[in-house]
View: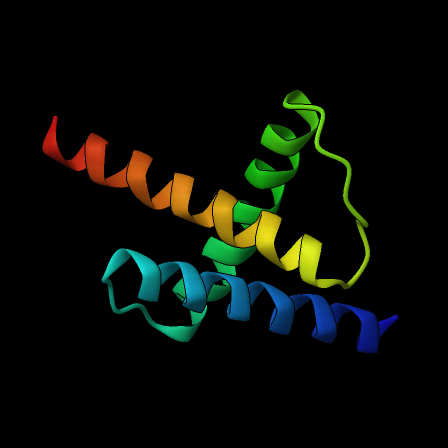
Amino acid sequence: MLLNLVIWVLFGALAGWIAAKVMGGENTLLTNIILGIVGAIVGGFVAGALGIKYDAGFSIESLLVAVVGAIIVILIVRLLRRA
């Protein structure tokens, strides 16, 4: 159980870090973890709404979904900061 939690946190940190690099930002480890976890939720919702099927476990597909979701979150935050 604890190992599973640690793996998900590391997975979220990786997804958040990749998204931050793609979007040209520098974040702390904690921010990357949160961004990756929220991104996975957002990405999963968007993928489901678009009818995209992917393996919800630990896979390249789920990492890609989390990264895309994190990029969406970054874009929304940047838009809200400008408003």
